[in-house]
Image 1 (cartoon, rainbow, N blue to C red):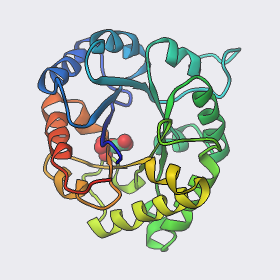
Image 2: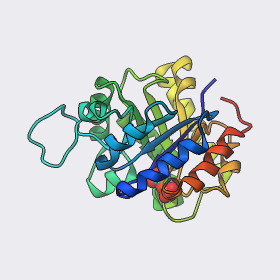
Image 3: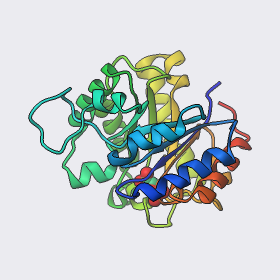
Image 4: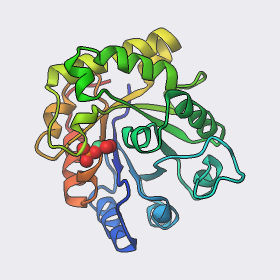
Length: 253
Ligand code: PGA
């Protein structure tokens, strides 16, 4: 059975004072029935890891370079993330793909670096609104999966997040049927490529305007094993409500 995962992506938000939200979160969930992950900006990784010590909160990065070290000003490598105490890294987020021109092959190279450093990759995929309108959603997702996900992954070191670009930060979400269709498709693709055992063990997150008031219905969709949450992960009270909804989800992996 897949253990559910509530992952928060703080994006480029958070100064030191914001660490109080992470502390409040672990106080509210000292023994959660799901996995909890926060991905703060790189400047807060080490202090958040420090505060998360001895608690069930895992901490992750939001990107990494494909090289382990070298002349890449401003970049952060996978071994650096691991060294800071991070256990996960988000890769291929649509904001990275759009703002930094990351292609599937770049995401795959970063994922290989992350796996070598012992990190779990949270690889993102998702269609634009124009692609959905043109009925190309599954083709796009299929291409992103085959291009971005490296060989040799397992249910321990890979999480896939489906994040329709038009749903991120907009307050709009796909219908539950649309979410289910894409998640079932991703599951089938993973099973076909990696075999049933591994394919069934990879957790699939939905992301894009997940809030306390829509979390429960989304979490009851088949093959939704949790969420990647942006805006609503910044406040402990909101993220906590989402975690509670996930703990009560009926769909079992
Ligand atoms: P959002 O962002 O929850 O603010 O829509 C989700 C994400 O980009 O991971």
